[in-house]
Amino acid sequence: MHAVTDKGRVLLVDDEPNALRVLSAILTEDGYRVRTAADVAEAKKLLGQWECDGVVTDIRMPGADGRQLFDYIKQNFPQIPVIFLTAFGTVESAVSAMLEGAFYYFVKPPDYNALKGILSRAVEQCRLRREVEQLRARLSADEQGPTLVTGSSQSRQVWDNIQALKDTETSVLVTGETGTGKELVARALHFQGVRREHPFVAVNCAAIPRELIESELFGYEKGAFTGANSQRIGRVEEAAGGSLFLDEIGELDISVQAKLLRLLQEKEFQRLGGNRKRTVDFRLIASTNRDLAAEVADGRFREDLFYRINVFAIEVPPLRRRVSDIPLLVAEFLREFCAREGKILSLSPQVMHLFEHYAWPGNVRQLRNVLERAVVLARGTEIGLRELPSEMVAEAADPSPNAVTVRPLKEIERQAVRDALEHCGGNKSRAARLLGLSRKALYKRISELDKV
Image (cartoon, rainbow, N blue to C red):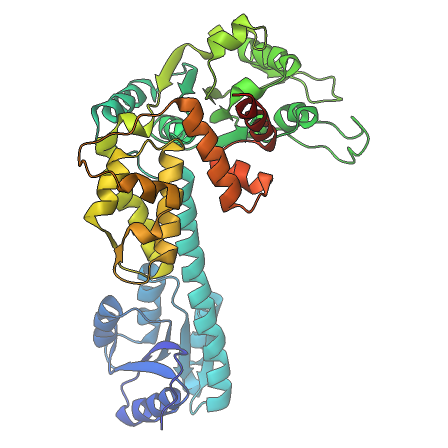
């Protein structure tokens, strides 16, 4: 009875039929999936059709030999390890191949237990290499972020602005409500542009305590302050050659705003505790959900910095103003979460109707969170009203298919804060993350809303 485990897929290459039968039976019994080839030509054909985790090949064969097969694998399938079987007369050739990257060699007839041990290590190494390659590919894709959805005329205008600005050195201010996708716009400006081969460094100004933001941006020298036991470069230096994205720049303290202005004007800065001026080249992209012009009028934001960063502004409209984007966003998020959860799901017509008539105070981020929750809860093949938060289901009771509920923004904001706190069991830190706010900003919203 063969083992039911899947230890890996192995290709055996040998011109001796009996040798193939014996080794194939041994490895199959041990849990490997095995295919065999009687010559190099057949082996190459199988390699092109079947992904394997290791090759065990004889060296001396009529026509092309095992060394030539090894050279072919090294050039076309470098992640696949090769183990040689060789007679005494070709040991020198096997050793030479190992120096060039072959995994191991055995003199015929091999010690089969030793061969199984070496093969196990070879297969594990091959699979780890594949996992690393896949992880690198995913990280690269994640770094660039999801593709911007451009189903509505408003979103297409945002995309047109990105295309017009992506290759310029112009500072860009991305504005819009919380959760609209401002960082997505910033990433598109970077990864679509000429600086895409250099770093994209994002700093959430609302999430870093006021007393730490300066050292986070500019770095510090050893001994600059208590606890500075070593030198540290800041995010500005990390962005050299690339783009620095200051998310929620309106949260910066006035003193840090002054240093940022000097940096933008002179492209020079000093680390905390340092005396040497350092030059850095980067492109600034900033975002805010505040009315910075009003912040300037109230003395909370420097006017000169405002004009410096607001050379060109891209407004990301709220989701309620770009309803035609919703089906595309739903498809994107469903694909992501269904793949993660191993499910195949669709939205019921009632849910899609509700989505297209809901106010979405949390914008795209809220839609994404609602869909993630629904996919996790869904037990059938369709997401229905029962998988949605209760306050959204209440709106679905409206019998008019074209009805649009319009509520004051403060009321919508108050409800979003309450829902987030309820969803997170009163945990304000988690609620703040869900809403896309800093903990400090959430406390401020709660205080302001309680006065309304």
